[in-house]
Image (cartoon, rainbow, N blue to C red; front, side, top):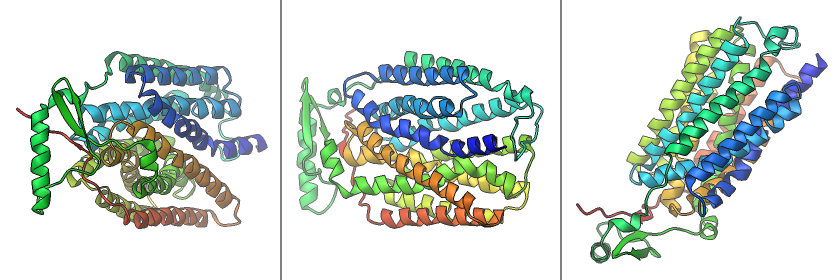
Length: 426
């Protein structure tokens, strides 16, 4: 029992371990994109993830190995290397629909969640055995023996996905070859006249006209140093730090909430909840990305998302039935889907595409602090001498408080016109 309790406490840090590798290598993945093709980076990241599952297959009994490899640090390193460059690659192919494309790309995450849930329930626990609160599944060896092969199964799936991505992913051609120079000069002159007249959208100060082969594009790419010196970057950074609190709690604790607060012990039903939540999360990523494109405002999009998130988390303790649990958990997953979807597009629109992957990687460092804080808060709340329902009320209130902080910070964000003006002559 003490061994199970100890391992359960360590597992609360699994997402933190993943984030340490994921966020720690995100910036490095962006740096590699300046020199390597996205195809090469994706192959490298996928290989690291496959290696982490193979190691976990041979050492499943060690919780520290699972934390270090499995779904922990090493797995996070692979994700961090390939995630940012993959999203930025898509944004460069579709520069006028960055939010929507980001939503489509990142919607793959909940699909993976569905796959892992199916493996967890249909392969590891097909008999729907109840989790013993004192020792877990330790008294059911038929379940325990299926754990190592499950890592091997995930490794095979990851190999197939990595091979598919390596074959088909490619970088967009340079934009410089799309616009004649005289068209850019005419656009600049017209923008100056519009600015003097008080109408139209003028050209941002410091924008550079890049010429190549008789063609040009109007582009303003902030350097990493310039971006780090701006208030907008740090608003995005601390917004991620605050919103990941709710995201982390939802990822790791919704099932425990359903089991201990709502008293749902049916693992098959919880699988259905997980699948429904993942579908809502998938749809939400596309919806939030498209909303950001249409509104053209990070501030307005965050206000809508933050307000909906705040209402949902503060009313979550009202859940008392299975149907209410499905509704509220699904809405939570819908709300948190916006956190990552709009991050890369707003960075690209605010600071340019060139260093977007690196800046995204730096913002991802906020997740290390956020997940560590969330794990600490969870541990402290679990050790408080409170009734079980009071612990969940406290957790919901604290998560709501972080959402309020994000909403306040967002008020200071100044939406800028897109830093890359694209002129397409037909």
